[in-house]
Amino acid sequence: MNIGRSRLAAAMAFALSCLALYAALEGLLDKNLYQEVVSVGTITKSLMIGSLAQDIISVPLSVILALLSLLFIKQPGFKKLITILGLTGYFFYGYGLYVIQGQYTSIFLVYLAIFSLSIYSIILGLLSFETSALKAYHLPSLLRWSIIIFFCLVLSILIPGWLLRISPDIAKHIPLGAYAVFILDLCVVFPAIGVTAGQLIQRKAFSVVLAGVVLFKLFTVCLSWGFSEWFLQFYGFGINYSLLAISGTLTIVSLLLIVLFLLNLRTELNPVTSQN
Image: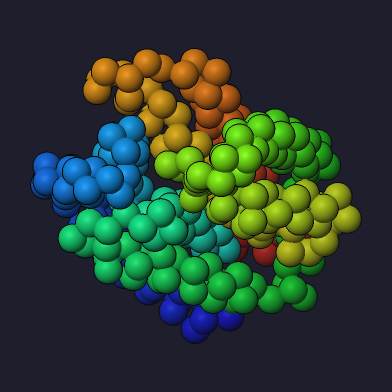
């Protein structure tokens, strides 16, 4: 691992975690922040509620990311960096939605900064891993195939679902309010999951890192998604039980696989170091 580059990635992750904590608290404490953009028609009321739900999830995740980043800067570790990059993926996705949808609140520039920092933190973090050293890390075959099957199921369920949801909007030439979800998922997230599954099947050295990052990203984003579906009921909206079931299942399964991933990731060269 390139320690200098990875520490820089962790420092950038710490900076974005502080900005994300500020943005989330601002969204929860300032009642006018989202209401102002709803009033001018930039976002719908349901998206405003989704933003509030995301803020609730973002507060603890930003604190965890900040603490992990500081801990990594002091004592670098393989698993710590994977976790940091996975959590950073959550903020890339969450604030990418705000940026793409043009959620022009009074702190829109903060959203831009978080989105930008998340992109370059992930890039620098991934470039910190040395391929030659990664060859020593491996997962048990059963766990590796469980992750592959899970990733393939995610793609087989969500890609057709998203295409069915976006097709009427394309026909009408009018985007749905949450169109940024389709952009990020179909253009970035789903291809990344597919590439990671392919890397795992081929036992590529870098697949271990990608698998961990994708699992953390899936868990955090699906947790936020599922919480949002449940949270809507407190503002007079009905619960979409099918979406709640899908997001809840993905959250639980990804969390289980994360635990197994962290417990079973081993290195043939230095088992002690791999536990950091």
